Image: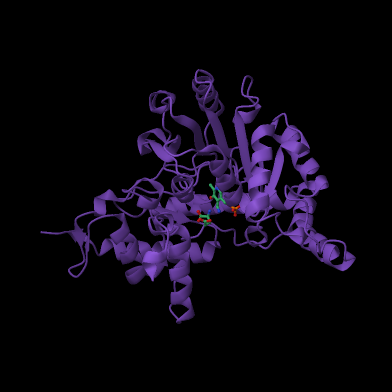
Length: 402
Ligand code: PMP
Ligand code: GLU
């Protein structure tokens, strides 16, 4: 009966991050000792005051009905205030649409913006789902590729060259999933200058890793002069507040687009969960002590992983300034074998590492960088140490095939 499925869904690949995560969980359930460095998911518990707010929301009995489609008014107000105060983004509560995770916010934006054939410039390496979401909405992704030598940062010239009359938007994540790269102020300014030359182009700035930033400086493109009305800022609670399962994210968009996304969401999923929204309000209004504590832990893990990775021959890595990923280039292992398995590409290497080292990582090809692999270090230091040791031992078994 597969042929009953739409062309749209038949041509849609599975999310590589979720697929690798699921495969890992299945293997673990069968009793295999796999260390999971595949999914980008904090290992911390949601801070207690946020959990408490959700419990209180249930106990109050006041939050069992459908919430307003774009989110509770007080949550939209708190988000708008956060964006004004922390990010200098001018915005009002009616520009905020709360969704089931930032993932839905991004999908809403593409669904509301794109006609068949419209183009979206995507900074590569990119987060895996951008490409599929653009395609699902009928658009055409146009990657611009950043190289390791340039910290994986595509240049403003590349952006300028990629923009055509069909371009509707450009999307990037900052800090970046999968590279951990942080786009510096001057880069974001240069990006804004290019966009300002092209009236028909919006920027979608995915700032979901904002709080996992090891140097402090975060430039929101939506805050820059001349960018008002030109930027959709995406953010959410999953990463910074360790709330992946609660499924709350949001966009701050120009009013016309926020209204369209609200209409779209009203016809597709309605609002994000009421109880999760009350928890998200507590996250917004509470302090950032826990957020900082988690960031500091990630920062220590990054140093540990970089040091351990440096001991493995043939891996080259940037020094990420944010998020919780390392994205080493692994091409030196292409054409290598352990006598039984030959590694042709990053996909093969990930399978090899899963089988031989019992460590799961994600192939760079899912992120538009086929000579890299992504390592998520959102797990404790002890496990990281074991995982990288196992990876090292497995990789040392590979030699150039004759
Ligand atoms: N953007 C990026 C760059 C991500 O890594 C993720 C990870 N899930 C998301 C958006 C979506 O996050 P969520 O839907 O959990 O809010
Ligand atoms: N964003 C995370 C990742 O890249 C979670 C999985 C997903 O939503 O794709 O691993």
